[in-house]
Length: 115
Image (tube, rainbow, N blue to C red; front, side):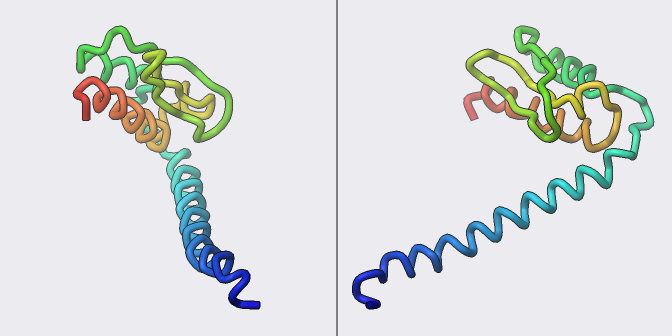
């Protein structure tokens, strides 16, 4: 029996820890985001404004900042030159939203610098 299905056992042994690690990471990100989503920045700057400021300072005026549905659905699209901020982040001035925004703008900077 072992001889016939040993590949499946090995894959299970390899994949199970990877799946558990990914699940743990997702839970950690979600709980940390929720924890700091009620903490507002002292300057009161909204995420969309921070994104535009950082992009303009990096000479990336051609990159657009758009709003997309969802929570933690933020991304940078290098083909369309857009930083997409989730509806929970776009108009928010929470520390979580600003951190996510800075992270996505960082992807635009990496693309600009071929990093």
